[in-house]
Image (cartoon, rainbow, N blue to C red; front, top):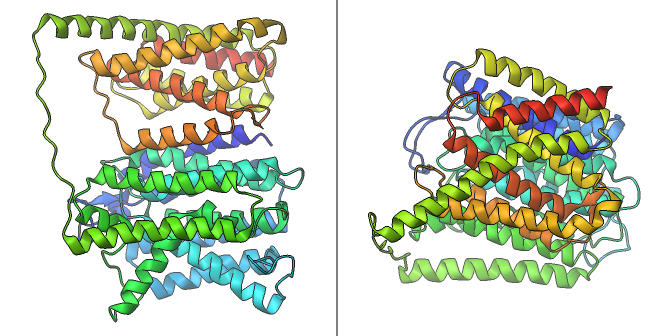
Length: 542
């Protein structure tokens, strides 16, 4: 099963399901009310987990070949989803949620037969089942709660999980055999997260809730153990520390502080890293970006140090974590806070400002013409279109056509999702089938994408009338691009992964820019996307 197809399907399901669930949230009681520990001032629907889980599991149930392990993962995910959804609606309490967590983990450990047998410093001496089984249960339940507790700021838990899953998928793909399950499951979860982050970026329109955070923690624990204990046993057993990163040490530090203060370990408090950053005066987005940066460093370190000695990996992990907490503690004890910075006023109305605005308009015109034109032209010259891509293109083309005819003039999830999917399909398939006889034109192609990227930056800076606010999701995208950039020569899903990611980011930002500026249904971008989807469908199904 094609992992990219799974990712896009999961993302599309998540994007489509969430607006529906947001409307139903008040009737189901799945609303997160403001409180002393919370950073939002109005009730927010906490139904994001529904989009994530449905998006992640639907492709697996539809197309993945099921064995005991994957079936155990799916059943465990559904159990956690059920308990989490009830908690989002009725506040079950920690001890009731533990029942669901132990059932889910028990499915993987006992029915799926997945246990930890290799631990740092004892490898290759395996753990006996009497120790390995309870340790596996403890580790997975711990990871479920680590992600659950890290879900405190807009985009935080989703972004951290996305970075970890990207690292796990990459390492699993590099294994010679037996890694397809892990790659597909990771890509499915990443697709669900990306669809969710579309609505969860600050200021969030929807929260993940326990149904989503417990599923992500379960998925991360499951895949990290599967990767290091079964798929590639040459990897250091200490590697999950770096792959899973900051949420693990954060929850351990929180438990320590609660125990030190004589508090209930499971009673919510404001001593997570993100709360402590906010208390030091960092903005919501700055706090998220700082945590993203640390998590990206950990994941990148895992990819670089995958075969290094256990003491090197754990030494780096504990060293960086110690530095983070030392700096936070010193800042708290000294009363240090982030200083407010003054913003220098601009000089609107000058001839220089008018010239810069005109340059911005020229650049935007180039983007507005080039992207729709390239979508249609490239879809016509791609030599081979897989049937699964053709099927999803046909479905999206029909949905988009109906939305264009009967939809309203405002922005539409169906239209926007179809535009993004068509762009990703065209970029990936054209890169995959780039004609060998055209290698001499590769430099020209790189130059075109470079010009397009520069034009987007200039437009954002100079053009008037374009509302495009930089968010933490933009920094998350940057971190992902930097991560894959370190492995620019690695083939992933049949293509150079860095090339596809960079091209996709440029084109998707261009599409978003055009959508923000161009109102209405019958825009050139919408028509070009509809045309490219139709071409891919007809040529792939012919």
